[in-house]
Amino acid sequence: MKPEEFRESIKKYGIELSDYQMNQYALYFKRLVEWNDKINLTAITEELDVYLKHFYDSLTIAFDRDMTRENLSLCDVGSGAGFPSIPLKIAFPNISITIVDSLNKRINFLSELTQELELDKVHLHHSRAEDFGQDTKFRESFDFVTARAVARLNVLSELCLPLVKVGGQFLAMKAAKSEEELTEAKKAIHLLGGKVKGEQQVSLPGTEDERFIIEIDKVRSTPKKYPRKAGIPNKKPLK
Image (cartoon, rainbow, N blue to C red; front, side):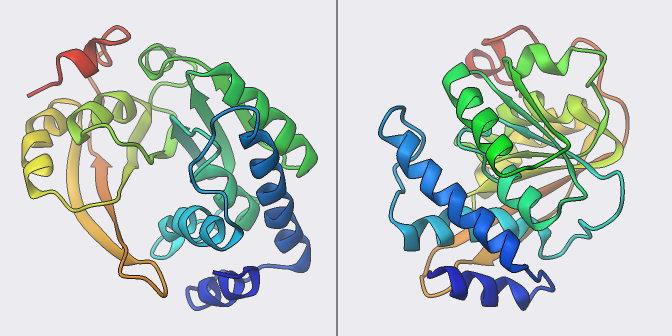
């Protein structure tokens, strides 16, 4: 997907980008490739693929949601190279973004990137998600929490749902549909104060690739003992 194709494709969903914003995406791509030579950020480095599989894919979260309201807060858990939160922030400057990642090298990249892109209301935290979710400053304080990760949904739910405010949503971005995974996670989601609202299917233009966004509403507070200590959710997932 060429940059202009990216611009036109998302316009269909009511997202209109200025030349300044397009320049921000271009700079993002350039710095991503440069830093990727020093630290492993992504296996996807060709421009056409970055615009489609990183930038466009990140913005699918906004296709059926109002991301324009003031004081909207989003926490991106395990953001890696900044997906989906930084592409969303460029398109919707009103959003307050918080990024949590356990690898300091990635946080250093994001720190330099967000300064160069002149993005405000971006907060970066070098932390394990389990520790971050127990911090009273952040617990149950975000409108949206996202994870674009390979962990199973019952693990992701324990890491992310404690951060979602009651009335907010956890949005799990998945590359494949898995009824088994969703069934496996339902008890954990209920225990953590969530309720599955639905699953949104999105196709990447010009390909047969599909993406799935699992929408989980936060309907009540998460019990204080969750998330458990670092490493435990992965080793002993809730069932």
